[in-house]
Image (cartoon, rainbow, N blue to C red; front, top):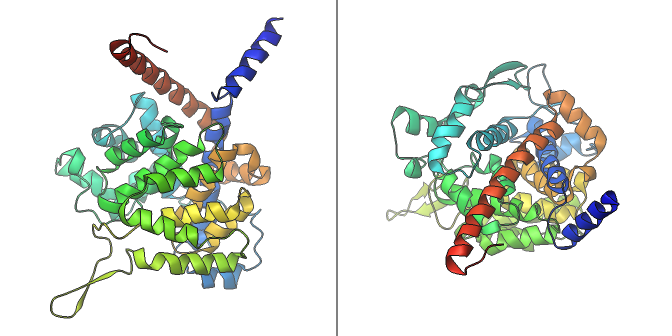
Length: 393
């Protein structure tokens, strides 16, 4: 009798829109697997243009990882800094047990990057993530730890790229369903790493993930949340590439049309005129009219994939350029929307093996942190309600 009552309560809870006991965990697992698989698939062709990838891997079966060209190198499903930083951010939330801001970037994330020893698959050794990062990704450490910059402005002066957007999605999970809060938390946190449209891209992607973690999430609801909250050049770029995306097109057409649509906002190819009549490169500098490429194209790949994991994966990887980050974002979003069950099991098993990880176990632990933060948020909301309307939830 008690069992039947519990089932009835669970059914009513689901109808009210609240996640079932395991729903959020399945979605977190999906985001982890999707992101890691996208990262591991795109890594060996990162930086390639679409025509080069098409020439070498035109008929590639995306049920299998693109191989590595060396024993210690990207490929075979090995994750890169994108996913390593996701793990570090998750551990930061677990240590804090609450929301993060720019100061927490310094106090929680940096120690995870600099001090924690983890297995780096592409290097085939245990080492700190910091030793794997490039100059842009190390900038925050120099600004915060060496020069003692104020965290909320520490990102100013860094080259604009996707160094923070690439790992921001756990902010969306912590703020599941609350896109505005995810946007604001990501923006506050990312200010310690970068500025301008790099922060905007991170905030928009976090909001998209918050939408993806809703129990009734869909590709359309995620895209609508991103377009609703995006600002400046990021908003223009997202709208342009989504308008150029038709799921009925073949993959080559999708790639060609979205690339052309994005070019006016490309921070890597932009120039501003000088009074002398010459031209100065505007790339990687703050701007209200430019955009990172990764987030708009990831959203376009999500739209073109139309809920199919392998289709989304192939679009994101085959686009080329920073395709490991694009694929990690797009496939992570789809994994959050659908849960891990929509991701081919052989790819999940292969990702665990290639990276010496158990993403499902990591998801279970992070889910507990999400619940702790959610309960604290509910307590604060109840205090506010009692103070303003005289009753709580």
